[in-house]
Structure formats: structure tokens, C-alpha cells
Amino acid sequence: AQTVTQSQPEMSVQEAETVTLSCTYDTSESDYYLFWYKQPPSRQMILVIRQEAYKQQNATENRFSVNFQKAAKSFSLKISDSQLGDAAMYFCAYRSSPWAGGGADGLTFGKGTHLIIQP
Amino acid sequence: DTGVSQNPRHKITKRGQNVTFRCDPISEHNRLYWYRQTLGQGPEFLTYFQNEAQLEKSRLLSDRFSAERPKGSFSTLEIQRTEQGDSAMYLCASSSGTSGGIYNEQFFGPGTRLTVL
Image (tube, rainbow over all chains, first blue to last red; front, side):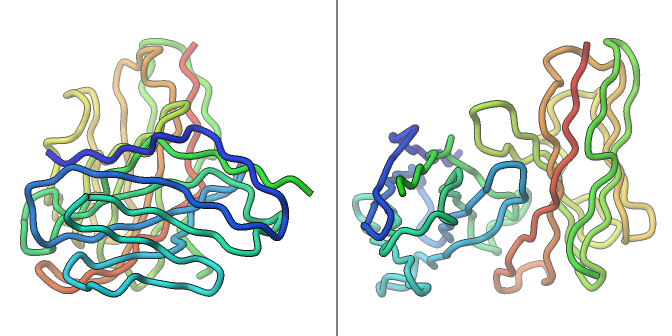
């Protein structure tokens, strides 16, 4: 079974600064997807960014980018120019390849990192 | 259709009672997922449907948990004989896509918070 580990329960950053959230995972699969989801207080979870394991290029979405190190099984999220609206729980998640079958479609989440933005 | 909806948003029940939650996915989505999120943890995958077929149910926490999606549209999650340990947020998500196809994003609902007294 796959596992996802987020070792930072809480991170704090000054508004407009850059912050990096860490995520490591364990899998024996070679084909999979990785995601960062954001869960604002009392609001629903939304996808921030995703990475396909077969792609060497790191994904970017505006101020959000990842550092995907497949051999090290590491997948960190960098948020540049932090804004007050970025304050939320951030979850790293893993999904098996669609061809893995069974419950492969379900996401495996880490415990999350609570991101605080200091004005 | 503005997104995945879940009802009720909050449910308080007494230990031993049965509860049922409903999820309405985004209308064109054929896949529907249920997760449980306990305090301080990430969501835990429970089960999922493609149309009306339940393709994975081994992750359901016990035989007290069951889910249905009878017409391939909305889904219900039932917990029988609730226990205090069932207190959690129950999340529903939906996505488009076919089995073996490329990934499609899972869109989450706001969740149903269950409190078992």
C-alpha cells in the first residue's frame, strides 16, 4: 500500500514571501499521479496542482510550483508571493495509475500542513 | 450545476442510531467517491462508483458502512449502529472519465460532519 507523509504539521510565512511545503511518499509503482490540495477553513477541498510521475518537468500553476524528485520519492510545493487567501490546510495526495485497477482511483492523502500567512 | 453538494451538512446522532448521507455529484460526472476525514488527518478513501457500479468497497471501514448509487446519479452513504468513533467529516467527490482512461480531477463537496454522542 502507498503512504504519504507530510512532516510539517504547521508552517508560517510572511505575506509576499515564499514558502515550501514538504511531502514524501512510498510506493512500489512506477506510474502514478501526485497532487496538492488546499482546504480552506470550513470550505471544500480544491486542487492546487498535479504531477504525472512519467513527466520529468515540474508542474507549475501561477504562483504554485512543485519540486518532484521521483528517485527520492519527494514532492514539495512552493508558494511564491504568499497571499492572505493562501491560508489553509494543504494536503499532499497520491493516486495510482488508472491501469492499476481496483481502488486505484481513490486518493491517498497525507495528514496535511496548516499554512499560516502573517500580514 | 455549481459543484458537488452534500446533505445534510451537519448531523448529530446518538450512539446506536443509523444515519444516511447524500451526495449529488456534478451532473456530467460518472465517477463518485466517498472519503472520511477525522480531526487532524487527511481524507481516507472509502469507496467509489463508476455510474451505478461500485468498483471498490474493500476500504469501507466495517460492515456497518454501505453505499449506493442506484441510478448512477446521486449516492448515499449509510452507517448502521453508529459508534462514537464514527464521528468525522464524510466527504464526497466526483470526476469524469472512464475506466482505464486518463486521469480526471476529483471535485470535492463541502462534506457532512457527523457527531455521535
